[in-house]
Image (cartoon, rainbow, N blue to C red; front, top):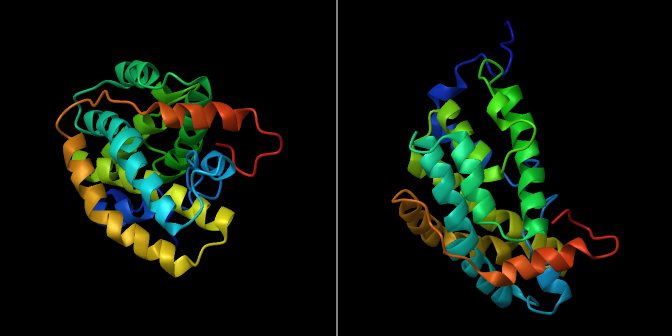
Length: 223
């Protein structure tokens, strides 16, 4: 049997499977590298258990994830150019540390996108790209709808922090899995809301977590 190089095998024809693969926390943008503020929240004593982890995740989904997913959905739907989307994300990311984290995750996603879709032109995402912006472009390349693209970003925002929280607090994986399952309907609701237009709300606590985390000595996660 002849092997077909990845990126040339029609993977865009299976949007559901691609959505599932892009929601994997093992990706370079996932919870093995970025905690989404949970490392600092644990250090500050704000997250100490499965219950407080769930509260953190719910708050993050309803704010940061909604904003990011709204930008990704607009890019995926062709309603927002890459250049303008980058400016919109800059305006919605007042924390310098949070911007750098988004750029770092964006670089990881661009690297993955170039391997999955080498035939696609990714020059607009150089030299840096916010994660939601490149996520929107990947949604287009993968054949995902704006709502599916938004759902991938919302879900990974939630599951990445959940994975990091599990590791930091040595929580029972089953308890964290149940928490993720219970928050899944909220993820779908927020993803649907994200398709209605650009969200512009903010939650300063996540900016504070990002700034304090950037000043930590020898952090376990990049953000």
